[in-house]
Image (cartoon, rainbow, N blue to C red; front, side, top):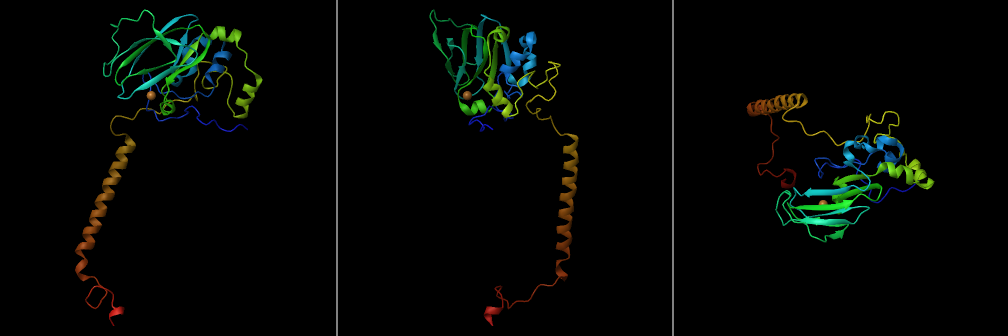
Length: 255
Ligand SMILES: [Cu+2]
């Protein structure tokens, strides 16, 4: 049995960070194995599950990522598998990218690029490296909060060229991780994602039926408590109080 990884990707993180309102949650089947075992359907982002935030990239497609930071913090964004062109980085508090920037003639190339607080960045790369590549903030606890998107690049090419060492399958088997099918491990109906890991439902607006019942009983309980205090208070004049010697400190030591 393998020891657990030191920094496992989130399986049920607090939904506190997201791209496009989607918090990343690790699928039951590793996305690479979904891409390798689902034939032509591997080109449909739906089978990877909502919470992988999957984007299918065609081979050699030119991809722009426009990232608008709706947060007051800085975030160094990292893309695996590529040294992208860094086209735009706004000042602090510039708001969303509105497409009026002039791109540099020779953009610098990086694999990590920081976005400023409430600003924006634009990245560009060519999808010339078939694989499954995560795009994520490089601050580790933001990864743990789900600030990840998945680039699934040329899955058909991947199926034709990539061979996984047996030891990798063995490692998954030893941990009970399935290695085929969609995000939920379904190998028969690839569009049936029953049992897939998803984020908790949003909080309901206002009171639910259970909440109303709980509120009613809480009010009754509170009123009963006040009534009991009033009843004992009204009965206080006739009750017995133990007699001391009048100094309010126990009687024994004074004798
Ligand atoms: Cu971050």
